[in-house]
Structures are given as structure tokens and as C-alpha cells.
Length: 187
Image 1 (cartoon, one colour):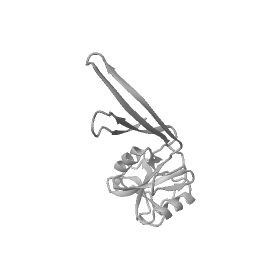
Image 2: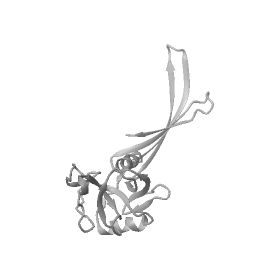
Image 3: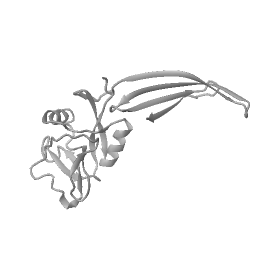
Image 4: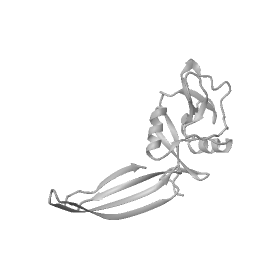
């Protein structure tokens, strides 16, 4: 398995550090690359992620309350990990609005519940299980416009996070200048 450049490979998965944003924005950004905010399964994994991303004081990860105020936490990717590493007295649901898991904010490797609207960097987890490159030629013929077009479509797909696929489509129409277009699809 190959992670994207500068990303971290740990225990069969890839992890990347996302720029500062709110928890929800971090989830959207992570989903755009086919992933989820990180689920932490063990003390070993917690320590490995802290070691890799230690230059950052606090990080969003994929733990969030199911309901407000002060509901139970669950993993955003649906995992059932029971490991936690809350700082003493946490989670405390201060002010009835602390709904998102924040790593490393009160002590090295410990967790805190925090207001999701604040901006921190985030750890995004993704898998790149297999790559499949496909290319083919499509000929468009339309009788109503008396138009024929020889177009090339190149597709590069790879699976991420198990069951979903990310595909890049490249369209090329030889009669147009600068006619190479790239589209990202998530299917």
C-alpha cells in the first residue's frame, strides 16, 4: 500500500495532517480524499500518531458526541473501538457545547472534549487498497447536429476506505486547444 506523499503509514493505513479548520470542515476535507477523521484503537496507535504529528499541540480526531447536550461519543467512521484516553476529569461537556474529540490539548496523548467550532489541525485516515487504471476511446455521433467527435477518456480509479472508489477522469478532444480536463469522482 502506498500513501500519498508526506503522509504516514501505520498498521496498514494512511494518515495525513489536515490544515486548521473546524471539526465539521475537517470531516468534509477528509471525505474529499476518501477518508475519515482518525479512529484511535489502542494506546500504541495513540502514541504513534502523537509521535508522528507531535509538532502540533492539539488535533481533531474522529470522536464526536451523538447528541447535544452531553450525549455519548461515537466514532465518525462507525467503528466500535472501545479505547479511550481522556484527560482526568474529561469529557466534562463544559457549557453543554463540547462535542468533539481533541487530542493532545491538555497533556501529551490525552483527549479532551472541545467546542467543534474552533479551528485545529486534524488527523485524517484513509486506505489505498488497490489501483486500477483504465483507458478507452469514446466516439460521439449525433445525427441531429451532423457532428462527429473523436474524444479520448482516461480513467484512473483506486479504492479507498474499503468500499468506496475515487476516480480521476481525463477528457481529451484533439480539435480543441487545451482540451485536457480532469474531474474527480467519488463513487
